[in-house]
Length: 451
Image (cartoon, rainbow, N blue to C red; front, side, top):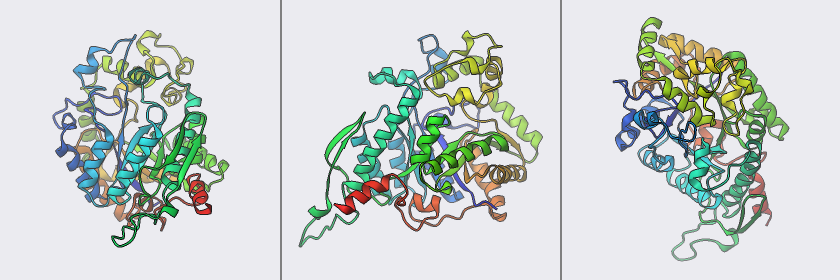
C-alpha cells in the first residue's frame, strides 16, 4: 500500500481558490489577518501528522472589462492578503516539525533577495522550508502593479529556469556547508570556503558573494504545479514535489505518468518527483448530512463572484461569451490549466461548476471511512504520493480531517510516518537534508567542491 504524505493548502486571505465562502458561520477565514488564526492551524497540522502547510499566493486582483468589480471588495474575493513569507516566519517560530511551503513568483521577484529570504527562513527553522515556484502573480493585473511587461506563457518557464539556476548558485555554490567556524579564538568563516559566484543568463545576472551562508537544506524543497507541456518539462527538471488538481483516477494517473516521464527525460529517476493531488472533502456521519452542509457553504457563492474569480485566474471574462462556446476556443497567456482542465465543456458548463469549486476541485462528501477509501483508491490507482487538503471551511475542515480521517488512514497503514528533522527528509525519506547528485542544483555544489 502507498505510504502517503499530507499538506494543508491555504491562502493568506479571506477566501480560497476563487470561492467566496467566508460568510458561513463556521468559517473563520475572515481572521486570516490575525496571528491566532495561523497558530491554531499550524497546531492542528503538526499535531495531526501533516508534513507541511502550503501557502498559496497571488499579487494581482480580479478585473472584468478592465475594472475591478465591486463584488471583489464586498466578498473579499482577492484582496487584501498577507505576505506568505511573513506568515511562514510566525508559523515556523511556533512549531518544531511542521514544514511551511511559500509561493514565490519568478516573474515578479528578483533572485538575489529572494534567495536570501528563503535561506534565512530555512536557517532559522532548522530546514523546514519549501518553495512553490510560480511563473506569474496569478493575474495580468500583477504585472501592471509591478510596472513590468507580461511575458508569454512558455517563455515564462524559460525565465523561471534562469531564475532557479541563479538561486542554486547562491544556495549551493556561494558558501560551503562548513564555511562557518565561529571560533572566538580563531576565525568566524573560512575564506577558502566562501566563493564568489557569477551568473549571466538570458533574464538574470549576478556577480559577487551570496548574502546568506549554507542553510540546513541548502536549496529549499522545490514544489511546482505546471500542467502545460512547458510546465511539466520544467517540473521534470527541477521539481521535487509536483502539485496537481483533483479529478478521477484516470485523469490523475495521466498527470502522474506525464510528470514522471518528464523527470526521466531530464535525466532523473521517475520516483524522484513526488506527485501530490488536491483533495477537498466534507466529513460527516452520513453522506446526506455532508451534502446538506456543503450546500449551505456553497449558498454563499454568487454568479458575480464566479465571473470575477475566473477572470482573476485567466484574464477571461466568461460573461462576455455565448454559453455554448467550447472552452477549448478560449486563449490566455495566464493559467492555461484553468482552460485545459475544462476540455469538452462549454462556457456555460464552467460558469455553473465554478461556483462550487473555483480554481480547485469538487469536494468528496461522506463518512470518514468513505473519505479514507477514496484517498486510498486515488493514490493506488493514480500512482500518487500524497495529497494537499484544501479545506471547505476553517478550522472545521482541517480538524475534521485530522480527527476523523487521519486515524483511519494510519490504522490502514496508508500514512508515511515521517521522522526526519528537515522537510526534505520527511517528504523523500532521504537520509540527507540536501538535494541528490542527479538534481540540477547539485551541479552548483559540484562546481564549488571542484574549485
